[in-house]
Image (cartoon, rainbow, N blue to C red):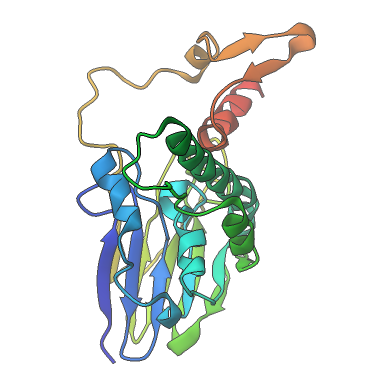
Length: 260
């Protein structure tokens, strides 16, 4: 039985990652991200989803960043009722990031209504804090390096990707075809070092993220981060980090690694 792969995001832009893979009877969605950045991109979050969410059998997440998970509350609000498989650490992060995203959606709508600059009367949030909490109930943590049987005879296998805690590359075996969704790959020496193992990659799927430029200088060493105004050195050797939860989820782990 042949498979069909559709790119519903993460193509032509580096946000909104969503990959739909399906056969005649079953559909799987790899990642479920928000479009972020310019208004023209953010407006795509309000468009009708290309397929009926009721017809998706399962979602698999590579990691917790909102450009890979932030559309989940809306997908579930519109009818998706299946499981959302991810690593345990990704599920833990989603419990922080998705409610935070719902809260910010509500505050953005509240601000627009208070200042009257939206053409919509009233301006509404993309989804609410309660929508986000509701979506957490469908998260199903799974282990790395173990095969997971999925609807339609598919099998998934998570390998550590080293991007943030819990980040995974997903190997999907279905109808005699192997597709690998890399997710975002990062510096594995900081956290979750991936094991080196051979994979029969018939179709590796990756996304070039934030790579549309050439660095004129090498990336700053980790020690340079501690000299920036982002950090305040307090008594008894404590660091105070400021920033959004989404940014902190990735950056703070690297800085903590530097403290070790």
